[in-house]
Image (tube, protein in one colour):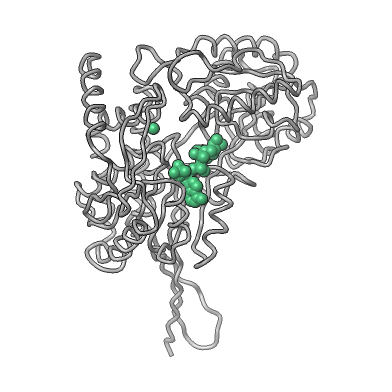
Length: 499
Ligand code: NAP
Ligand code: MG
């Protein structure tokens, strides 16, 4: 789209948002919260308000669950053939693509991320993950089980949709997370209530509206706006059969407790503190570009962000210098600014948290190679930051910061077990990367690493067919791929006495 058209469309979108109050989407109805309460959604690149949104509470959760239950148990969705479900999911992917510019504008306004990234990464991946899941809709098979019991028996299994799914999503990749959770749920025949993060409701709502437009029956995709309380009420509700959550470890743990009432099933994607291990034979240019992108992409607000760099002493100084240079060369700005490459933190509170951890690290003896400051400008920006001399026991090393903050540690040891032991020393286990030109070192190291995803000569990667998720406190279960389908199914065994 030409630059001037984009500026006009952004201005139109801002104008439209400022005049309208965002409503919940429950069944086919757009509804304000029953209490009439609203909250303000802001533009993190300026700190200015963008829109007002319905602030849902228990009564609204009740209505959304009733709509999702009715759609699951009765009506066209419950009777729909798998191929038809697949066709609708595919049509929704088409709709995301035909509305790609509109969705990318909304995503960029809501998160502050560069518009081009929203367009070519967020919206594009959301559509491709839906397409992948559309293909699964008519392939969710059972099996037959040979019997050794006396007599003649037929035993077979069916994988049934689990029921009503609450998808509680974060603010870092808002649309992509909704698609990632709704896609498999819809493919197997569940109904969904999406609760987007309070900071970023815009694209989740459009996702729900587009689902209705392409022909999903009302109640199959519902969108409930609001704060964590609305999420907690969904988690506690007996009419919800499954929660799929992405967000913080603390909320993940509260969801485990909150779901105990009806023992609903839970999957959790909770982030990490991912190591990047650089061996001395690695290609310096490629490592510098790859590791800098691993921590600075999306302003470090990625669950897989490469936040702990372990680099062999022979490469440490030149690599740190190159990453610092790349960090200092990033262009901070709002999503629609010319040539912007680094957006803001999502909120004032989040930037304060990021800076608090960084300042504590400096007070504990870390050295600052660059950054560790909030630039003096509107919006919630934080300078790309590289800290050296960090060690386990410091919060900068142990806690997920979720900002553009890299901790560097050197190693001299050539013993892979010793290097792996350092990298694996974390409460998390989402991802990790190995950088080397030596094939055996790469695979031997990958084998010694504990995260759910290991990358070789890259960091941060997602593919609809690749299982995505982590070990330890990075969560429960896997998203994407065939592996995620069972998280939305119950297996039913049927035994037939053949006489
Ligand atoms: P969060 O509180 O865990 O929020 C994630 C989602 O959970 C949001 O939709 C949130 O709603 C909802 N929620 C909050 N409290 C809830 C509760 N008691 N029951 C059910 N749902 C609840 O995350 P955050 O506070 O925005 O971010 C804090 C930290 O979480 C970040 O610094 C980062 O470390 C981590 N994080 C990880 C990921 C990831 O991709 N794994 C993504 C985002 C954040 P509200 O937004 O309305 O509170
Ligand atoms: Mg926002």
